[in-house]
Image 1 (cartoon, rainbow, N blue to C red):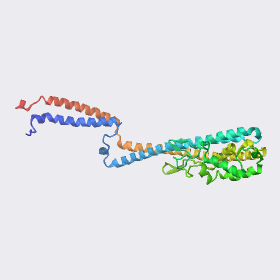
Image 2: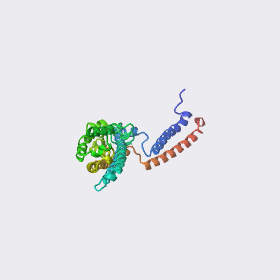
Image 3: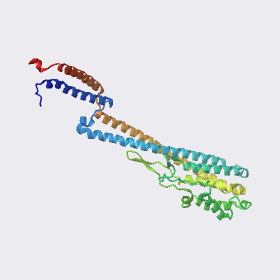
Length: 351
Protein backbone atom coordinates (compact mmCIF):
# COMPACT_ATOMS: atom_id res chain seq x y z
CA UNK A 1 0.00 0.00 0.00
CA UNK A 2 1.38 3.43 -0.96
CA UNK A 3 0.58 6.50 1.09
CA UNK A 4 -0.56 9.62 -0.72
CA UNK A 5 1.57 12.76 -0.71
CA UNK A 6 -1.25 14.44 1.17
CA UNK A 7 -1.56 11.73 3.80
CA UNK A 8 -0.94 12.18 7.53
CA UNK A 9 2.14 9.90 7.28
CA UNK A 10 3.65 12.18 4.64
CA UNK A 11 2.98 15.16 6.89
CA UNK A 12 4.75 13.49 9.80
CA UNK A 13 7.76 12.22 7.82
CA UNK A 14 8.72 15.42 6.02
CA UNK A 15 10.45 17.06 9.07
CA UNK A 16 12.15 13.75 9.88
CA UNK A 17 13.89 13.74 6.48
CA UNK A 18 15.31 17.17 7.20
CA UNK A 19 16.48 16.03 10.66
CA UNK A 20 18.39 13.12 9.16
CA UNK A 21 20.18 15.47 6.80
CA UNK A 22 21.06 17.82 9.65
CA UNK A 23 22.36 14.93 11.79
CA UNK A 24 24.61 13.83 8.91
CA UNK A 25 25.94 17.39 8.54
CA UNK A 26 26.60 17.64 12.29
CA UNK A 27 28.43 14.29 12.28
CA UNK A 28 30.58 15.54 9.42
CA UNK A 29 31.32 18.82 11.23
CA UNK A 30 32.20 16.94 14.42
CA UNK A 31 34.60 14.69 12.49
CA UNK A 32 36.28 17.72 10.97
CA UNK A 33 36.65 19.30 14.41
CA UNK A 34 38.12 16.10 15.90
CA UNK A 35 40.64 15.94 13.00
CA UNK A 36 41.83 19.44 13.83
CA UNK A 37 40.02 21.23 11.04
CA UNK A 38 40.67 18.70 8.25
CA UNK A 39 37.96 17.77 5.80
CA UNK A 40 36.04 14.66 6.88
CA UNK A 41 36.23 13.33 3.33
CA UNK A 42 39.23 14.91 1.61
CA UNK A 43 38.68 13.17 -1.72
CA UNK A 44 35.06 14.30 -1.93
CA UNK A 45 35.92 17.90 -1.10
CA UNK A 46 39.04 18.26 -3.28
CA UNK A 47 37.88 16.38 -6.34
CA UNK A 48 40.52 16.60 -9.11
CA UNK A 49 43.00 18.21 -6.65
CA UNK A 50 43.14 15.01 -4.58
CA UNK A 51 46.13 13.78 -6.62
CA UNK A 52 48.11 16.88 -5.70
CA UNK A 53 47.28 16.38 -2.05
CA UNK A 54 48.38 12.73 -2.13
CA UNK A 55 51.65 13.62 -3.89
CA UNK A 56 52.47 16.24 -1.27
CA UNK A 57 51.81 13.79 1.55
CA UNK A 58 53.94 11.12 -0.14
CA UNK A 59 56.84 13.55 -0.48
CA UNK A 60 56.59 14.41 3.21
CA UNK A 61 56.60 10.70 4.12
CA UNK A 62 59.68 10.15 1.94
CA UNK A 63 61.49 13.06 3.60
CA UNK A 64 60.63 11.79 7.08
CA UNK A 65 61.92 8.34 6.12
CA UNK A 66 65.17 10.00 4.98
CA UNK A 67 65.39 11.75 8.34
CA UNK A 68 64.99 8.42 10.12
CA UNK A 69 67.79 6.93 8.04
CA UNK A 70 69.94 9.97 8.77
CA UNK A 71 69.34 9.54 12.50
CA UNK A 72 70.68 5.98 12.36
CA UNK A 73 73.60 7.11 10.21
CA UNK A 74 74.25 9.92 12.67
CA UNK A 75 74.59 7.41 15.52
CA UNK A 76 77.20 5.51 13.50
CA UNK A 77 79.14 8.64 12.60
CA UNK A 78 79.02 9.96 16.16
CA UNK A 79 80.15 6.60 17.57
CA UNK A 80 82.99 6.50 15.04
CA UNK A 81 84.13 10.00 15.97
CA UNK A 82 84.09 9.20 19.70
CA UNK A 83 86.05 5.97 19.18
CA UNK A 84 88.65 7.79 17.07
CA UNK A 85 88.99 10.39 19.82
CA UNK A 86 89.82 7.68 22.36
CA UNK A 87 92.21 5.94 19.98
CA UNK A 88 94.03 9.19 19.21
CA UNK A 89 94.23 10.15 22.90
CA UNK A 90 95.78 6.76 23.71
CA UNK A 91 98.34 7.11 20.93
CA UNK A 92 99.32 10.61 22.05
CA UNK A 93 99.73 9.54 25.68
CA UNK A 94 101.84 6.57 24.59
CA UNK A 95 103.97 8.89 22.47
CA UNK A 96 104.61 10.95 25.60
CA UNK A 97 105.65 7.77 27.41
CA UNK A 98 108.34 6.92 24.87
CA UNK A 99 109.76 10.42 24.47
CA UNK A 100 113.57 10.79 24.45
CA UNK A 101 115.23 11.08 27.83
CA UNK A 102 113.62 8.01 29.39
CA UNK A 103 115.90 5.49 31.03
CA UNK A 104 115.23 2.49 28.83
CA UNK A 105 116.53 -0.11 31.29
CA UNK A 106 114.15 1.01 34.04
CA UNK A 107 111.31 2.05 31.75
CA UNK A 108 111.06 -1.06 29.61
CA UNK A 109 108.64 -2.94 31.86
CA UNK A 110 106.31 0.04 32.08
CA UNK A 111 106.40 0.47 28.31
CA UNK A 112 105.54 -3.20 27.76
CA UNK A 113 102.63 -2.96 30.19
CA UNK A 114 101.27 0.23 28.65
CA UNK A 115 101.65 -1.08 25.10
CA UNK A 116 99.75 -4.24 25.97
CA UNK A 117 96.99 -2.25 27.67
CA UNK A 118 96.63 0.14 24.75
CA UNK A 119 96.58 -2.71 22.23
CA UNK A 120 93.61 -4.23 24.07
CA UNK A 121 91.90 -0.83 24.13
CA UNK A 122 92.57 -0.30 20.42
CA UNK A 123 91.01 -3.64 19.54
CA UNK A 124 88.00 -2.91 21.77
CA UNK A 125 87.43 0.50 20.15
CA UNK A 126 87.78 -0.88 16.64
CA UNK A 127 85.33 -3.68 17.42
CA UNK A 128 82.71 -1.35 18.89
CA UNK A 129 79.23 -1.50 17.40
CA UNK A 130 76.07 0.61 17.20
CA UNK A 131 72.63 -0.93 16.63
CA UNK A 132 74.26 -4.30 16.02
CA UNK A 133 76.59 -3.00 13.30
CA UNK A 134 80.37 -2.81 13.67
CA UNK A 135 81.63 0.73 13.17
CA UNK A 136 84.99 -0.03 11.54
CA UNK A 137 84.06 -2.90 9.22
CA UNK A 138 83.36 -0.79 6.15
CA UNK A 139 80.37 -2.11 4.24
CA UNK A 140 80.70 -5.53 5.93
CA UNK A 141 79.04 -4.26 9.10
CA UNK A 142 78.20 -7.76 10.34
CA UNK A 143 81.87 -8.85 10.47
CA UNK A 144 84.18 -8.15 13.41
CA UNK A 145 86.86 -5.85 11.95
CA UNK A 146 89.89 -6.72 14.10
CA UNK A 147 91.08 -10.00 15.59
CA UNK A 148 91.58 -10.14 19.35
CA UNK A 149 95.32 -10.73 19.72
CA UNK A 150 94.94 -11.21 23.50
CA UNK A 151 92.73 -14.26 23.09
CA UNK A 152 93.53 -17.78 24.30
CA UNK A 153 94.81 -19.68 22.39
CA UNK A 154 96.95 -16.92 20.80
CA UNK A 155 95.47 -15.29 17.72
CA UNK A 156 97.05 -15.63 14.29
CA UNK A 157 98.36 -12.04 14.43
CA UNK A 158 100.28 -12.67 17.64
CA UNK A 159 101.65 -15.96 16.41
CA UNK A 160 102.72 -14.35 13.12
CA UNK A 161 104.81 -11.73 14.96
CA UNK A 162 106.49 -14.36 17.13
CA UNK A 163 107.21 -16.51 14.07
CA UNK A 164 108.67 -13.55 12.17
CA UNK A 165 110.94 -12.77 15.12
CA UNK A 166 112.00 -16.42 15.38
CA UNK A 167 112.79 -16.54 11.66
CA UNK A 168 114.86 -13.34 11.87
CA UNK A 169 116.89 -14.10 15.01
CA UNK A 170 116.63 -17.84 15.57
CA UNK A 171 114.91 -17.63 18.98
CA UNK A 172 111.68 -16.41 20.54
CA UNK A 173 111.24 -12.79 21.73
CA UNK A 174 112.57 -12.17 25.24
CA UNK A 175 114.92 -15.18 25.23
CA UNK A 176 117.91 -14.51 27.50
CA UNK A 177 120.80 -14.15 27.12
CA UNK A 178 120.44 -14.43 23.31
CA UNK A 179 118.20 -11.36 23.01
CA UNK A 180 120.87 -9.10 24.52
CA UNK A 181 123.14 -9.92 21.58
CA UNK A 182 120.75 -8.50 18.98
CA UNK A 183 122.48 -5.50 17.46
CA UNK A 184 120.86 -2.19 16.63
CA UNK A 185 121.42 -2.83 12.93
CA UNK A 186 119.74 -6.23 13.10
CA UNK A 187 116.78 -4.81 14.98
CA UNK A 188 116.41 -1.97 12.50
CA UNK A 189 116.38 -4.43 9.62
CA UNK A 190 113.75 -6.57 11.38
CA UNK A 191 111.48 -3.63 12.16
CA UNK A 192 111.68 -2.17 8.65
CA UNK A 193 111.36 -5.55 6.93
CA UNK A 194 109.58 -8.63 8.33
CA UNK A 195 107.79 -6.76 11.15
CA UNK A 196 106.42 -4.04 8.87
CA UNK A 197 105.28 -6.64 6.34
CA UNK A 198 102.94 -8.13 8.96
CA UNK A 199 100.92 -4.90 8.94
CA UNK A 200 100.78 -4.51 5.16
CA UNK A 201 98.72 -6.43 2.63
CA UNK A 202 98.26 -9.32 2.21
CA UNK A 203 99.36 -10.35 5.71
CA UNK A 204 97.27 -7.66 7.39
CA UNK A 205 94.08 -9.08 5.97
CA UNK A 206 95.15 -12.65 6.65
CA UNK A 207 95.94 -12.21 10.35
CA UNK A 208 94.54 -8.93 11.65
CA UNK A 209 91.59 -7.53 9.75
CA UNK A 210 88.20 -8.77 8.64
CA UNK A 211 87.04 -5.32 7.54
CA UNK A 212 86.20 -4.24 4.01
CA UNK A 213 88.25 -1.51 2.36
CA UNK A 214 85.00 0.00 1.03
CA UNK A 215 83.28 2.47 3.34
CA UNK A 216 79.52 2.98 3.66
CA UNK A 217 78.10 5.57 1.25
CA UNK A 218 74.92 7.16 2.58
CA UNK A 219 72.43 9.53 1.00
CA UNK A 220 71.95 12.62 3.15
CA UNK A 221 69.33 14.66 1.28
CA UNK A 222 68.33 15.49 -2.27
CA UNK A 223 70.80 13.08 -3.88
CA UNK A 224 73.73 14.33 -1.77
CA UNK A 225 75.91 11.43 -0.57
CA UNK A 226 78.84 11.03 1.81
CA UNK A 227 81.07 8.29 3.20
CA UNK A 228 79.73 7.71 6.69
CA UNK A 229 82.14 5.09 8.05
CA UNK A 230 85.84 4.47 8.59
CA UNK A 231 87.29 1.01 8.07
CA UNK A 232 89.97 -0.65 10.19
CA UNK A 233 92.33 -1.00 7.22
CA UNK A 234 93.40 2.65 7.19
CA UNK A 235 97.10 3.37 7.62
CA UNK A 236 96.67 4.93 11.06
CA UNK A 237 95.17 1.72 12.46
CA UNK A 238 97.96 -0.41 11.00
CA UNK A 239 100.57 1.93 12.47
CA UNK A 240 98.99 1.74 15.92
CA UNK A 241 98.65 -2.03 15.75
CA UNK A 242 102.35 -2.30 14.90
CA UNK A 243 103.26 0.27 17.56
CA UNK A 244 101.56 -1.58 20.41
CA UNK A 245 102.55 -5.02 19.14
CA UNK A 246 106.23 -4.07 18.97
CA UNK A 247 106.04 -2.46 22.41
CA UNK A 248 104.38 -5.45 24.05
CA UNK A 249 105.72 -8.47 22.10
CA UNK A 250 109.31 -7.78 21.06
CA UNK A 251 110.79 -8.51 24.48
CA UNK A 252 111.86 -4.94 25.14
CA UNK A 253 113.34 -5.48 28.60
CA UNK A 254 115.69 -8.22 27.33
CA UNK A 255 117.34 -6.00 24.69
CA UNK A 256 120.61 -4.13 25.01
CA UNK A 257 120.26 -0.33 25.53
CA UNK A 258 121.44 0.51 22.02
CA UNK A 259 118.96 -1.95 20.52
CA UNK A 260 116.22 -0.67 22.79
CA UNK A 261 116.94 2.79 21.42
CA UNK A 262 116.15 1.59 17.91
CA UNK A 263 112.86 0.12 19.10
CA UNK A 264 111.93 3.36 20.86
CA UNK A 265 112.78 5.40 17.78
CA UNK A 266 110.47 3.16 15.74
CA UNK A 267 107.67 3.45 18.27
CA UNK A 268 107.94 7.23 18.36
CA UNK A 269 107.86 7.37 14.59
CA UNK A 270 104.78 5.11 14.45
CA UNK A 271 102.98 7.00 17.22
CA UNK A 272 103.56 10.45 15.73
CA UNK A 273 102.48 9.41 12.23
CA UNK A 274 99.43 7.57 13.57
CA UNK A 275 98.34 10.59 15.62
CA UNK A 276 98.65 12.84 12.56
CA UNK A 277 96.71 10.42 10.35
CA UNK A 278 93.99 10.00 12.99
CA UNK A 279 93.58 13.77 13.20
CA UNK A 280 92.97 13.91 9.44
CA UNK A 281 90.47 11.05 9.60
CA UNK A 282 88.62 12.72 12.48
CA UNK A 283 88.50 15.98 10.54
CA UNK A 284 86.86 14.14 7.64
CA UNK A 285 84.31 12.57 9.99
CA UNK A 286 83.64 15.99 11.51
CA UNK A 287 82.94 17.42 8.05
CA UNK A 288 80.44 14.62 7.43
CA UNK A 289 78.72 15.45 10.73
CA UNK A 290 78.41 19.09 9.64
CA UNK A 291 77.00 18.06 6.27
CA UNK A 292 74.48 15.80 7.99
CA UNK A 293 73.35 18.63 10.24
CA UNK A 294 72.89 20.91 7.21
CA UNK A 295 71.00 18.12 5.41
CA UNK A 296 68.66 17.65 8.37
CA UNK A 297 67.94 21.39 8.45
CA UNK A 298 67.14 21.25 4.73
CA UNK A 299 64.84 18.27 5.25
CA UNK A 300 63.05 20.08 8.09
CA UNK A 301 62.47 23.11 5.85
CA UNK A 302 61.11 20.97 3.01
CA UNK A 303 58.82 19.05 5.35
CA UNK A 304 57.40 22.26 6.82
CA UNK A 305 56.84 23.74 3.35
CA UNK A 306 55.16 20.64 1.92
CA UNK A 307 53.10 20.09 5.07
CA UNK A 308 51.81 23.65 4.74
CA UNK A 309 50.93 22.85 1.13
CA UNK A 310 48.68 19.87 1.82
CA UNK A 311 47.31 21.44 5.00
CA UNK A 312 46.05 24.39 2.99
CA UNK A 313 44.28 21.98 0.65
CA UNK A 314 42.74 19.86 3.39
CA UNK A 315 42.03 22.43 6.08
CA UNK A 316 38.66 23.84 7.12
CA UNK A 317 38.36 27.33 8.62
CA UNK A 318 37.91 26.50 12.32
CA UNK A 319 35.98 29.68 13.06
CA UNK A 320 33.60 28.97 10.18
CA UNK A 321 33.38 25.33 11.29
CA UNK A 322 32.35 26.27 14.85
CA UNK A 323 29.71 28.67 13.51
CA UNK A 324 28.40 26.01 11.16
CA UNK A 325 28.22 23.49 14.02
CA UNK A 326 26.18 25.86 16.16
CA UNK A 327 23.81 26.69 13.29
CA UNK A 328 23.32 23.01 12.45
CA UNK A 329 22.56 22.19 16.09
CA UNK A 330 20.05 25.03 16.25
CA UNK A 331 18.42 23.89 13.02
CA UNK A 332 18.23 20.34 14.35
CA UNK A 333 16.49 21.50 17.52
CA UNK A 334 13.97 23.39 15.41
CA UNK A 335 13.44 20.27 13.30
CA UNK A 336 12.83 18.15 16.40
CA UNK A 337 10.34 20.71 17.68
CA UNK A 338 8.51 20.76 14.36
CA UNK A 339 8.41 17.00 14.27
CA UNK A 340 6.88 16.92 17.72
CA UNK A 341 4.28 19.51 16.76
CA UNK A 342 3.49 17.83 13.47
CA UNK A 343 2.77 14.51 15.18
CA UNK A 344 -0.10 16.19 17.02
CA UNK A 345 -1.69 17.17 13.71
CA UNK A 346 -3.92 14.83 11.67
CA UNK A 347 -5.67 15.49 8.39
CA UNK A 348 -8.75 13.86 9.91
CA UNK A 349 -9.10 16.94 12.08
CA UNK A 350 -9.70 18.96 8.94
CA UNK A 351 -12.13 16.64 7.25
